[in-house]
Image 1 (cartoon, rainbow, N blue to C red):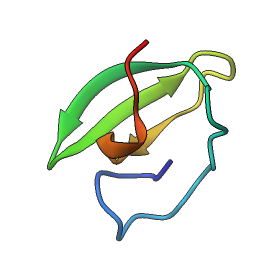
Image 2: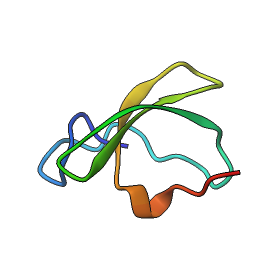
Image 3: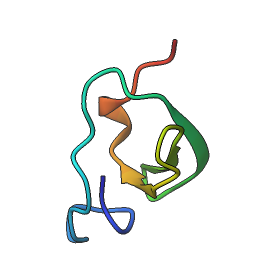
Amino acid sequence: MREGPGPQYVLVETLATGVSVVIIGTEAGWVHIRVKESGHEGWVNPRYLVQN
């Protein structure tokens, strides 16, 4: 998970497989998420997301 929508932004957290997130929005092909368990927010490449 990164600070902003792109690989040039700082990596702020590595999420484990299966972590539940809420999608807040999208920008520049990236997805803004909130981690349900911790409340942390950041940006991820959508190829790492799977809908349950």
